Picture 1 (cartoon, rainbow, N blue to C red):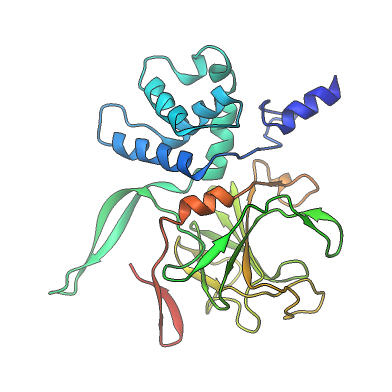
Picture 2 (picture 1 turned 45 degrees about the vertical axis):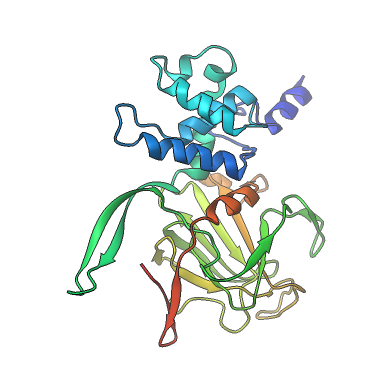
Length: 308
């Protein structure tokens, strides 16, 4: 019986193990599904019943058991959320598992969309003003204007050091490509890691998401002044693409292909931050989704800055 329960949990069909926080998330939402939910959210703002894209995704996933969610499911979920019945009280799978998926997807996507402001400068007076806006406020990890490619590689086998699954998405590009913070947060890790080379770890403000950027450029991996404890904004240049890593010795190019290893860890309890059961999710479709929003950057007197 225990084996059956564990198998179901790993498929993402049960909300919790014995402890009072989530131990596993099977994040399987395609880029078109993410885009559809956000568009439904944005279209509803200012209306009588504003929707939340994470609620839409959670309800759609509850119907589907977490897999095979379609754009049509998001549209159906949006319609249901406009009704009088709270999603937790809907019949069947929807009511039973909505709360789990809402918490799981809230951890994965909670800081990516919402209210923000756009800075605009009057061309005649030079004065800047901030214009309120709503929508996607996170950025692709690859700056605008730089070519890149990727493929689904989450879970692929890696052998350096020890046999293990690949817990991220490798984004291929040119040496020195500016890497941008996907979301605002605090730098928690900076320096050399024998597996990731020069790397950066950034924790979101709600502390649910830990973004990992690895294999950065030899000799000059980071944006000037970047330090542990520093707060960065979404879209800020934080480093530069390279191929460092796979070495106990610092500043070594032992990776054959220039690329960024981009990973996302979900943290529901601080004990999960560094342990044998960390929750890393497949970000391939998230990278596809964020590709519509890339930060424009430029080098000003040797310092890379974001162009608002």
